[in-house]
Structures are given as C-alpha cells and as structure tokens.
Length: 123
Image 1 (cartoon, rainbow, N blue to C red):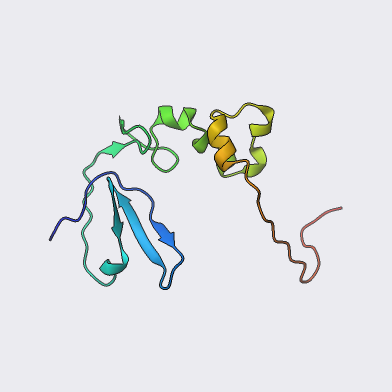
Image 2 (cartoon, rainbow, N blue to C red):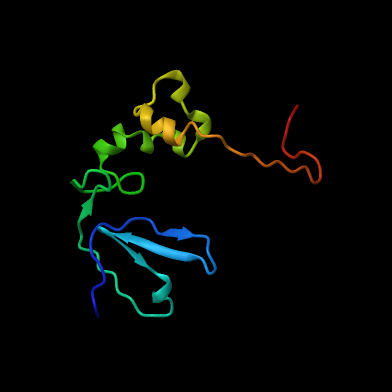
C-alpha cells in the first residue's frame, strides 16, 4: 500500500461545500479524505505520543493532544474553552491575553426560539 503521509495525527477538518470536504492533518500535510471514500486505507500507530503544541514526546496526552506542561500553561487548554461562562479574560487573569483577544473576546450570535413555552426554568 502506498504511503500518503506520516506524522502527528490531528482532528479531522471539515468544510461546508458541495459535497462536504474532509481533510485530516497528518504531520506537515493535510490529507484530503474525499478521494479515499470507499477505498481501503491503513493507519499505523507508532506507539509514540507527541505534543501537538511543542512536539515533546509524552507518555500520555491531555486535551486533544497536549503534553502536561502545555496543558497547564496554554489558554487554549483552559476550562473556558468548554465552559465559556467560566472565562476569566475580563478579570485580567487569562494565561495568554493575545490568544484570548483573538478567540475568546469575539461577538457571538445567540438564537433563541420559543416554540412552546420555556422549559426547565424555575422563577
């Protein structure tokens, strides 16, 4: 079987097109997956884990592929990524204020629909 790419595997990317476009970051390459649909492919795990931020070899990964030191220091690994209500950027305690400006402090559109009354609210 022909080798297409090798390296650190990241989460698959999708792009809304017609049809949806799928790519998987693998090392320094982004492998387009659409041409591989219905084809046999083989992935081999080397047994090694490397941090997706610093490249350091690690025994285990945290938060989608970070080593423990990066997991502890990077704002992108903070709990506010999963729980925006816990964001502390406005308190001046963000680990990486420049990153927070770019990713956290963005306008959001919230869509609310009241189709049959409010549910689960205690007043």
